Image (cartoon, rainbow, N blue to C red):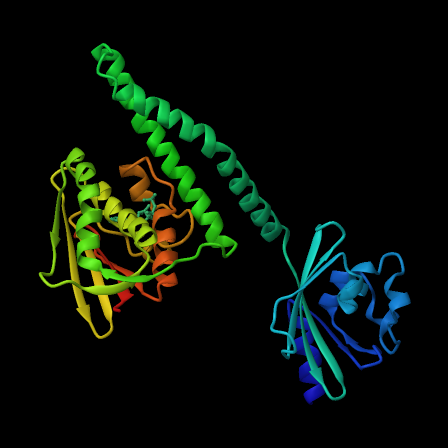
Amino acid sequence: MEAEILSKVLAGIDEACIVYSPDFTIHSFNKRAEDMFRIPAAEIIGKSFSIDMAKVLGREAFGQVMYPSIAPSAARLSEPGADPAVMRIAFAEGEREFITTTFSFASGFVKLVREVTREELLARSKGDFITIAAHQLRTPATAANWALESLASDTSLPSAASGLARTGHAASQALLSIITRLLDAAQIEDGRFGVDPRPGDLSAFLGESLSHIMPYAKSLGVSLYFERQSAPVIALFDASRLGMAVQNIVDNAIKYSGPEGRVTVTLSSSDGFAEVSVADTGPGIPDEDMPQIFGKFFRGSDARRAVTEGSGLGLYLAKNIIEAHHGRIWAESAEGRGSVFHFTVPRA
Ligand code: ADP
């Protein structure tokens, strides 16, 4: 009965499953394994699969999964000595990639193999491409921004030319900010985005950050309020990173509220954490968008219609920054009744 259940389950699962003894005699080779490695089970069950057999033409993929030391690239994903051992094995110039999970028993091993899909491989190379493109764009964009900034502040220019220079400067600043967000997102992906939290007064920090955002609120006709606490709120945060998170959240509240909107930032503190809330009088977030708003490149369809400009990276970055501080971030919203974004950071 148990053998019957097991063989049915193994035939149905989406991962290749190989059961073998310590001398590499193959005992079980499911349907998915046959398809993945293009080897009929009958051909290898009962045989001891030696390293020489692994090198036979047409069997390389299976050979390298069984003997990772002969694979062009093999990386351990689990801790050394952990059971199961998880490995990433790339085969033939990165064209195919496998994640293997090997459980060991006194009588042998069970290896589960998942093939990384073409879509996943493509998504990764797309990520690399974006990083390289953003890096290449940053230097000329910085130079153009600097030149336009100098021009825009040149009082000797005729007024038509000076208006053009100011428009150009605003556009180049928007461009630089998109490039910076793309680079930050790429750093998060490959785990290089660190934070260095230090004790500081969160109330003073928020006051300062919001004073930089005030001109943007004014330019869109939005009132921005800060209900600050009179006493300092000492918390642990990385001012430059947290500044980015605050800016992304408050910028959204302002841009989605639109003219005559009101954005209120509140700071409170409770057991061990300081909490910042940003409430707006904007259109709110549809229920179906809610689970996705912190995802990478997500832009709500209503939001896209109302505000054409946006990268879909602001909340993704904010979430990663807050979580790197061991804080929490969440949103509450009702369509037509505004949104409130909350985040916490630990108190010092
Ligand atoms: P972007 O603003 O560039 O589109 P974000 O990552 O900052 O990207 O936000 C993701 C999505 O979340 C937005 O496209 C919008 O649909 C929604 N959103 C974020 N903040 C608000 C807000 N204050 N009011 C309404 N919708 C919001």
